[in-house]
Length: 216
Ligand SMILES: NC(=O)c1ccc[n+]([C@@H]2O[C@H](COP(=O)([O-])OP(=O)(O)OC[C@H]3O[C@@H](n4cnc5c(N)ncnc54)[C@H](OP(=O)(O)O)[C@@H]3O)[C@@H](O)[C@H]2O)c1
Image (tube, rainbow, N blue to C red; front, side, top):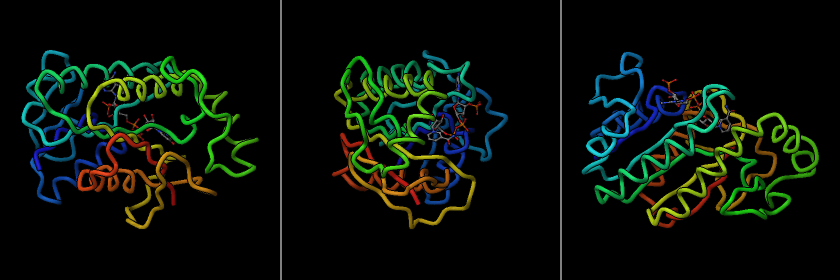
C-alpha cells in the first residue's frame, strides 16, 4: 500500500514506520524534524501547504500526532483538522489515528454528554485511575476528544484507536481489542502493538468509523 505516516518520529509513529517499511509498503513521512527519522523514506515537512502533496495518492494516512508536553496540547485536533482538509481536497479516504482510553468519557462539543463510565472499565479504573488521569491530563484529553469530533464530522473512513498507558516493549501481536469500549484490566499496551493494529485495521473494513480499545 501507499501510506502517509504523520508524526513518524514519535513513539508510535516510529513503530508504524518500521513495521510499514518491513511489510513492503511505500511510505511518505510527515514530520517536523526529518533528521530524526529512523528510515530513509520520502519526508515532507509539517506544513499545511505540503500536506496535500504528502497525502495525494495514498491508500491511507496513519497519524501518531500528539502533544510531547501539556504545553503542546491542541496539536492533535489542529493537526488532524489540517490532515482531514488535505485528504478531502485530494480524495483520500482512509485515516487511522491514536487517541486514549479515557476519551470515551471526555465531553467535546460534538459529544457533550458522553457516558459517565466506559463499559469496559472495571471498578478501580472507573472510580480511581480514570478520574485521576482525566484531572491530570485535562488539556491533552480535551484536545484528543476534539480530534475525535473532527474525524466523526469528516465524512472520511476513519478509525480511532484508544490505548491505555503506553510502553516501549517489543511488539507481541497478541494484544486484545474491543469496538467502542476499553478492555477490562487493560492497563498497558506497547507502542509497537498500537502501531501493529494501525496497520492491521487497514485490511479490516469493519473497523471503519469505529473507536477501538486496545490493551495487553
Ligand atoms: N503516553 C501515554 O501513555 C499515552 C497513552 C494513551 C494515549 N496516548 C496518546 O498517544 C499519542 C502518541 O503517543 P507517542 O508515545 O507516540 O507520543 P510521542 O512520542 O510524544 O509522539 C508525538 C508525535 O507528535 C509529533 N508532534 C507533536 N507536536 C507537534 C507539532 N506541533 N508539530 C508537528 N509534530 C508534532 C511529535 O513530533 P517530534 O517527533 O518531532 O517531537 C511526535 O512525532 C500521544 O501523543 C497521546 O496523545 C499516550
